[in-house]
Image 1 (cartoon, rainbow, N blue to C red):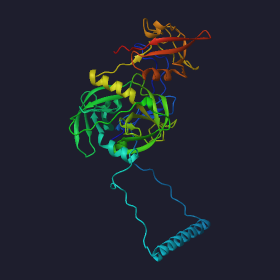
Image 2: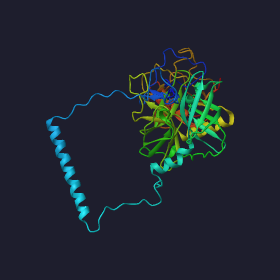
Image 3: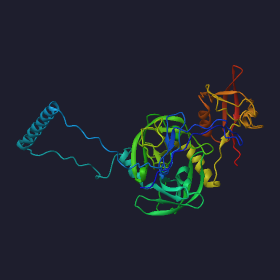
Image 4: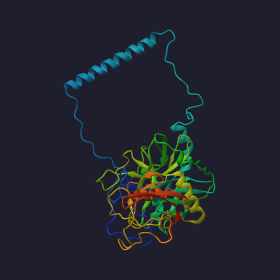
Length: 432
């Protein structure tokens, strides 16, 4: 089986060009699902790892090899007696039931025939959602200098655009090969239209013949407790369907290595997601895409992804649509910023702007940037965004990244022990 991708580490601050850090970035607890070898794993909320496609697999990790089973001990005399009694009771009950049926003048059990045939299921059921969605979900196969493996993707429109994760196709590099495999086993070569590591999204282009795009819902309408269905190719097993609920919203997930992080205000789900699910859709009860599966939680202390522990993360569909449309149009995505460099050494509540420009080699406040125009100063501590508390630096960044360039936001800052509100308009980061 192809290797699964390696997890990526946690992210940093407000991505100002030239900003540096005096302390190394901690490795994110979240790991990508399907890069060249498997999905990314994440550790709950602190710092997530992006999910990588099953394209990159961690060295020595064999996700499909079963663990040796410890020999079972047989039941003691008490257990054996209890089992014998239960077996006798069941046998007696069955015998009585059979006898009763045999003596009944009407004779025989009642067989219920499902109307509409065995393949039809009620609208909104997991089976009905799967029947509609599975043909539009593909396995993404990647090979190149960075490795080889598989991930997931889904049909975005009728022009042959396929959405997947950046970490799924990243291993292909500039000269590698990317292809998709349909549910019937046929394969089609794919070209990379655009990709963005910050949102962990990529767009492929294939021959659109006989491809049906999935409908897309608004992630802003999703509520905790909503039932969801995940479709993809975990461990390379195509057309796999799992189900669960939305277990949390706007979970700050920062995954990847320093300088190549993904910032996601994620939809959290307990639907089983494993290496290889990366890039596949998370669907609501109507079968609409409300997220793209991208990372899984990792138990603290573990160095490798061990599979689903019931805490997975998806990129919200509102962010997906905005980013994918930009990638299709220009091959690049815009990243909204407020124009400050944040102090990762700060261990208090909120996100602190650097004390001065020289503190960590970057600019505390970018001249004429959104923060500068709004009146933010070096050393300010940002405690709220749009009236919602900010607990740390990563939460601020992921919430900013969930918005669009041009959006207006209100920041509450603390300066000299006093709080004040400032309003600013988000601007696009300068791309290097």
